[in-house]
Image 1 (cartoon, rainbow, N blue to C red):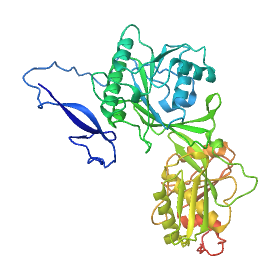
Image 2 (cartoon, rainbow, N blue to C red; image 1 turned 180 degrees about the vertical axis):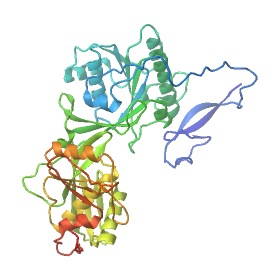
Image 3 (tube, rainbow, N blue to C red; image 1 turned 45 degrees about the vertical axis):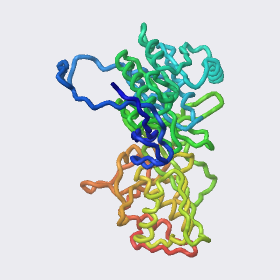
Image 4 (cartoon, rainbow, N blue to C red; image 1 turned 120 degrees about the vertical axis):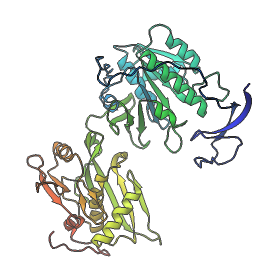
Length: 468
C-alpha cells in the first residue's frame, strides 16, 4: 500500500526534496520549494507481464502531409512555419499585458470563418472575453467560449462528438487535475495538465495552443519539460515603453526556429507590420555621429536596425558599460579588440550602446556595425550616409564573413541604401556582388573600417592606416 508523505518540489527545475530549505540544491534558486502531497512506493520493474509488439514503418509513406490551417495573420503564420498543423501543440509565453491573449483571440476570430474554434479561459469570465472581443471588433465571430479550469471537464467535453479544429487554453497555469493534491500552478499540476491536453490533441487530431505565464527571468513558469512536450514554443517580446511587439519562435518542429513576426499594439488590437526594417530605422534630418545601420537576419527575414552609441568621459574610477538590446559580453570583446588591435583609447570613458526600437539583436554579424558606431562616436565623424554595415569580428581584429549576404544587401537596396561595408568575399578570389547601383566596400581587418574615422576627437588615440 502506498504511504502518503509530504515532499517539496522546486517550481523552477521540478527537483524533489524531502524537507524544505530556502535554496534549491539542484538549480540554486531561492524560495522556490513548495510543499506538495506525494506517495512513497517501492520502485517496480516491468515484471513478467508482456507488452504488445510495436509496428515499424518506413520513412517514406503514402499518406499525404496534413494541411496547415492559415489564420490570415501573415506575421503569426510566418512564425508558425506557414500555419497551424493539425494535431500539434503550441506554447505561447510572454510578460503580463504584452498581448498574448489579444493575438490569440484575433487568430481565433480569423480561423472561425472556416473552422470550429474553441477558446477556454481559466483567468477571465465569459463576459470579460466578450468585452475584449467587442473592443477588437470580433463580437460576431463564431468562436466557442468557455470558462473552465478542470482538466477532467475539458477532456470530457472535447472527447465527445466532433472536436474543434483549434483549442486555445489560457492559461495552462490555471488548469488543475483533481487527482493531484497540489494547488494549480505548481510543477506537478502544470506538467500533468499539459500532458493530458497534448495527449488528447494528438489522438483527436486538433491543434491545441497553451498560454504560459513567465517568471521574472523571462522563462515560462512551470517545469522545463513542458517546452519539450510541445511542438512549438513562441515567445512574445517587447518593451512597455514601445508599441511594437515581436513574436519569436524558439522551437518549431514544423518550421524554422528563431523566426519572428512584428506587431504594433494599437487601441483595436495588434496590427501586423509588413515592413519592420523601416520601423526600426530612425529618420534624421542631418548626419549624426555614433549611429550605424545593421543589416541583420531574424530567422529567414532580413531586417535593418539602427545601433546607437555614446562614448563620454567617465567621472568614476570604473567606467560604465550600459547595453540595451545587445549582449554586454560581446560589447566588452569588441571594445577590447578596438583597444588592443587598433589603438583606440576607450578604457577611461563611459560606453552606452542601444538598439533602436526595442529590438534585441543576438547574431555575431552585428560586431562590425557596433564597432562603426563606437568609432563614429569617439571620433565625432558620422558613418557615410545611406550605408549598411555587417560582419563578425575576430579576436585578432580580422573581419569574418557571415551568412545570407545577398538577402541582407537586397533588403538594404529595397529601402534606398546605396553603400555597404561588408567582410571580404571568400573563395576563388571573387568579390561580393551587390544589387545594381550599390557601392560595396569589402574589408579584411577592423583597421580598414577605422580608416573612415581618421580624424580623432580630442583626448583619443587613433592609428592612421596607410592602406585606408
